[in-house]
Length: 331
Image (cartoon, rainbow, N blue to C red; front, top):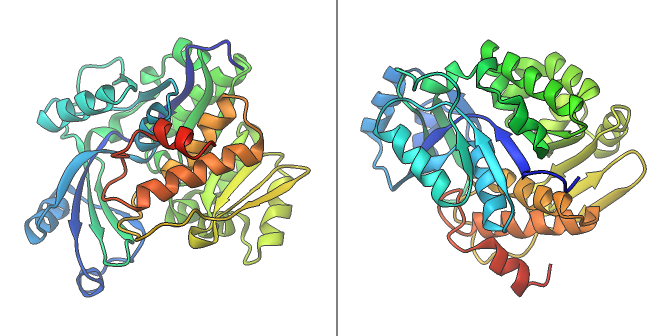
């Protein structure tokens, strides 16, 4: 698969993350479900922003975080997403390109909608509760998908979050078709258990028809498989003939395909600061290994390393070059 310009091209929401530390009482009083993502209107986002004290602002978005992680490991990623014609849009573009990700913001003029924001509330245990205003992201559409760029990527990586917008779903289907026509592979991140609940049928169809690699945490995969037992979930996903990566927090991860299962323990972390991006960075490590010829266990170890690094800091972009950690830990 190495005859490609890019290791992975991600398609997803171009979002600026606004982080704030809050306690469980604040989350409960605001009517939020801790540890999940909720879509909010521009008005709701602005009202919440006024109630919090932002600690940090940075470019984010699930697939964008994964691409930034791959770049930090020394890989060659690209990202397709829509931003607004505003300061946050320029900040997103400058930020993601500065870390080594080629950014394509679509074939249309910049959106007149604001760039998307995600208010990330981090509780003392490191859990993140997200309130996302999608803004310009809702305008991602099939014309934004450059089939030549898809064809020049070993793997196309898709956010499950995209299923909340009809035009984005059409864009994803176009990208999957282009990938299959070019004998490339498709990876899907389930993103959130509520996303799975809203779009379970569509996601299962996509997995059966187009997906080669599946990423999700235990809750997301259990919701997808309508299972409450690990063995049942593995059995049902094996029927879809995908390589699946299930993260399990402090229990590590389970990686399985049609024949084998590997269990990887979580790497030790002195203190869990912020779980924002843990799954995104696990996917980054795994995909970096996958596109550079590592075996499944080696891919999973890279994912565990990247996830451990990201939860030990605030924010979903590693403050330490992950390529240095790969070398230091001899991964």
